[in-house]
Image 1 (cartoon, one colour):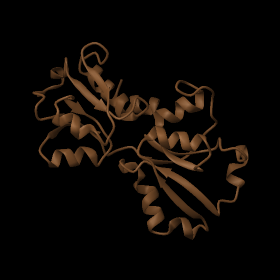
Image 2 (cartoon, rainbow, N blue to C red):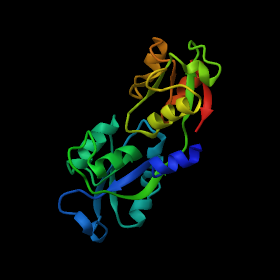
Image 3 (cartoon, helix red, strand yellow):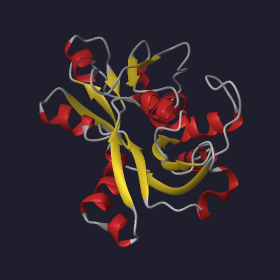
Length: 217
């Protein structure tokens, strides 16, 4: 299976605005007045840039909407606030959208959702730590790759990359869950050999000479 086909079958682009499921809105969401609304963003990821740019350039105001951007430290925290109705829309990773919509764990029941906009599908790489001694894909055997969430495109791409290159991600290597804020510390302590995170985390660690790019997304 080609990488592009793999992505198409698993994600709607990668990161999306997600609407609906807020009590009182239901199927009439697009007919509802949005004079005042709050949008959740995940600041550590480059995928929040379209929403931030639109806010700073006054695009929302031109449409008669007063938008407040609420930043969250983790995608899980953002999703919890979205489901609780604390924010009207959110920047949410694609696999998490599908899991919530279908009621797959960790979600206990289906949550109806709408994906009106894709925020980001590029801007990530598989990075190899300087200490890891990885020179080719087969060298990932008995190594670890960090990803920030099992419900992220980065987690799926990491596993796909390993499988495509003859490395079983469940037996021959480990895809570790590490937050964006902690991945550099894990690299410093040699607790991970590689990582795939949203930008600008990858570029920041590379700029310090601690890792190098092995594959562009």
